[in-house]
Image (tube, rainbow, N blue to C red; front, side, top):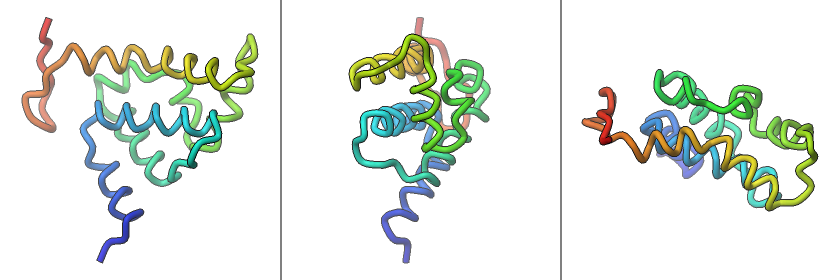
Length: 121
């Protein structure tokens, strides 16, 4: 029988890319604002899912490419210039970095999982 963590890990591998984007952004924001820690295996699998998809991979922000592990996110964000010294600044920075991926989600309609999305505009 799968426990909760195993179930979450399996789900992250099977998430549609747009859902993986949302989960990654939420995990990264939680990490830099000291909220509940993200599961490192779930993070790695969702990250791999986003980067391997041709559409989402092409728009993946540098912060996602540079942080193969969830604990790398803190160092990455702290190294930004000008410094991101508040939780709000860190949240805003990550949301801006993920904006193209989130916009892609709003401008495409998946035909079915595993197929190429159609543009709605």
